Amino acid sequence: MMAAVGGFGKMVFSSRIQEAKFSIHTSPIKKMGLTYRALNILPLMGNGENTGAATVERLAGRDLNRSGKVVNLVICGNSRFYDFEWLEQQLDDWIKFHEHPDLIIVGGASGVDYLAERWADNNAIPMAIFSEAWNAPRSGLRDSGRPEAAPSLIDDMLDHATHVIGFPGSKSKWTTALVNRARTRGIQAVEIPTPD
Image (cartoon, rainbow, N blue to C red):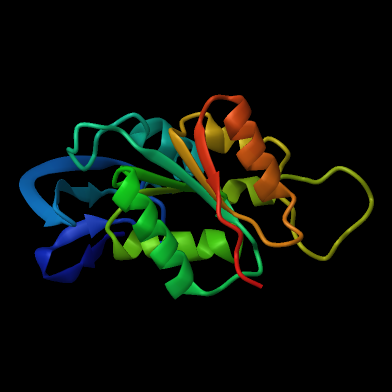
């Protein structure tokens, strides 16, 4: 499946349909002052290559926006936060002081993860969504009524990350753990608490 953005005919990833394979076309597209190449999305069906891990393996480490620097940005945060305008402003401000991301990596949760997917779509940035982490069986007998990610999700997301932005809420545990692990691994990480 393919999704076109704007009148440019640029092919990008839908927030709920991850890319499977792509080829880079020769026609450049200008976005926020950077040159991107149109990506042709060729989905594969049922072969396990349409996962966040497979997407990161294919796209991480590539200078997709041709800026001269590779930025694989992990965005994580409060699963109960849904103020898109606020999050959009924070991400736009981060770009002013850093670099436009080549790849957005999210865990596939609700709240900030979902908003980050929307932001990446709006800005024509490829993304890897680790939604498969939520399908892993949980250990223990207690059912919280809400799926939980596999414990390996943090390391899986950070394996190809160059930068991390965490948007924790007052009760966020996973976000804080991810940001701390990123810092331990020498990955540039910032925390911006979500407003209550």
